Length: 234
Ligand SMILES: NC(=O)c1ccc[n+]([C@@H]2O[C@H](COP(=O)([O-])OP(=O)(O)OC[C@H]3O[C@@H](n4cnc5c(N)ncnc54)[C@H](OP(=O)(O)O)[C@@H]3O)[C@@H](O)[C@H]2O)c1
Image (cartoon, rainbow, N blue to C red; front, side, top):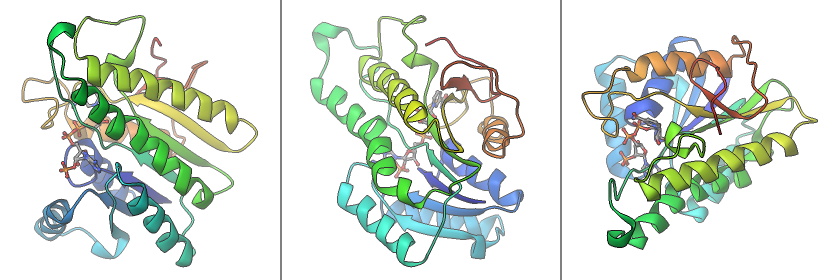
């Protein structure tokens, strides 16, 4: 499979890259800037990864021009994608009361966490294989309305909207053999999740790649599931 992953230089995106690479897939790693490129290039060398199966693309998800150019580049090379994984996200303005909230944090969170995946799908959908393909939007339990908590407004609202976007895409693509999932990856030990998190990003990545490979029987009426393929409450 050809798997396109945003935010593949660190955290969950990187672990999905490692897991998918080990399973023989080709990775299209979309990275925000040159610093992220050099971070991933160093890891590829240090970990003796098979560099011929990793294509690095400069792609800030907030910049539609970057994404359009990336799509054009892939199209010219006749690349067919089997999965698009939107993992890149930011978590800012945490635990801030509404009265103290910096609205720019909300705007920036939507820009990366919701508009990012929307821009990616807008431009890359044309490259997706007609069968057995997937769009994986990495979401969060923080985006659940049922389990809402009074905090993390920028992040939670952007992930809630991402869940709806996933549901809309799922319904729009229902006649195709393209599945759409909005996946809560678990609370993981990454820069975002911090060192106290119970789950390793490797474990979550294994589950997510199983879902991409359709190795998991998923019983969920909605697109929102966890990394094991279990239904999540919207
Ligand atoms: N960690 C958790 O416990 C947890 C829990 C629930 C959900 N999630 C979700 O899981 C996903 C991965 O999180 P993580 O823990 O791996 O986060 P992370 O360690 O903070 O990594 C975030 C990644 O997103 C990239 N990124 C940020 N802004 C970007 C932009 N504008 N364009 C392209 N890439 C950008 C970062 O690139 P740079 O290195 O260039 O900044 C980095 O690669 C996210 O969607 C997150 O919301 C995480």
